[in-house]
Structures are given as structure tokens and as C-alpha cells.
Image (cartoon, rainbow, N blue to C red; front, side, top):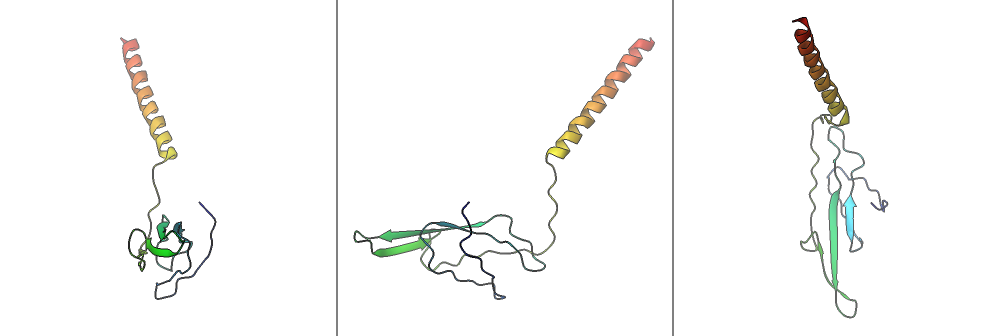
Length: 116
């Protein structure tokens, strides 16, 4: 991922205009969400493609495969985020618990057979 070129603060209207961007792939990354909203988990991809004639004059351009006047809608959601669950800690506890149960069953079976 490249470095941030510009940092902006979205106004209360929620609408921002970008001008003068190069014809490459860009990412919009939310660094802070408005109060009461969740921060976006993933960046929003924006790809600008420019078409030039043989003399290098710009003929047309598109944003994300659409026209040249594209509104990219990014919606922030309200509410609380649940913590992510699972991962290595859960796997380790599951394996240790399963081994303890198997060990207990094996011990009980051996004890039962040795008593006879």
C-alpha cells in the first residue's frame, strides 16, 4: 500500500469532491468515523482510467468503469461492533479440552479393566 497523498475531513454534508487525481488505482481509507458510527473495515478502491489519442491529448476518462462524473457512495453504519471471535486462542483451548476429555476417558477405561 502506498503512502497517503492527502488527508481530508468530510464536512457535515458528507460529500467531498476530489480533483486532479492521477489515472491510477487509489484507495480511500477512513481513519476516524463520525461520533456514533463505525469506522470502515476495508478501504474503498477507486480506479481512474484515462484514454489519450496519439498526440497525448486526453480523450476520455472513467472512474471505476463508469463515466467521468462518478459519485462513489460510502456508507457509515451506526451501532456497536462485536469483537472478532475465534482465532488461535479458541483453537488451542478446543484442542486442550478435547485432549483432556480423551485422556479422562482413556484413564477411566484402563481403571475399569484393571479392577476386574
